Image 1: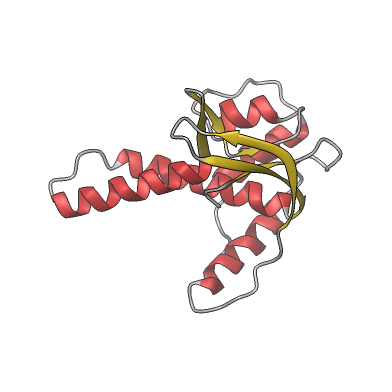
Image 2: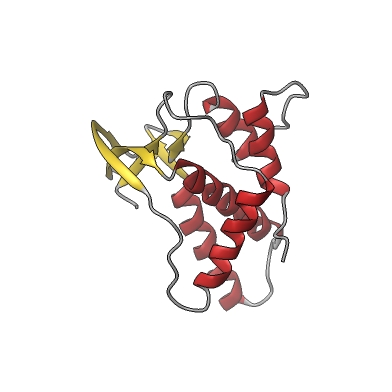
Length: 164
């Protein structure tokens, strides 16, 4: 994944997952912990767009053809996990602190990329949701009170808990 960035084309439906789909994903993730488990497909189409990160890494942009809801939700999950790791703060145990710092670095690289000194999401949503996604879902800015239905579903996905 490190050599890819992802985009969801405007022709794709906006974020549509609700409680049932989120519960199903939680169930899939739970089953993956006990061994191999099929958790759906992700179909990508490499575009002609190549980006170079601030570290000199080349990334090919890939359009998400199928699996956009799942990829978006997993990215939300990773961003929430990163926030939890940040709340741990300074840890007295240096070995544990090093492990947490490494986990934060790896998770951050799955969520964001640095292009020419500008931090961008590794996954870009369609034009109607792109800035909301960047600023309010995986970013730290408070969400406006007036929102599109898909924006609300993105926010809901950040706080819904598994049913089991």
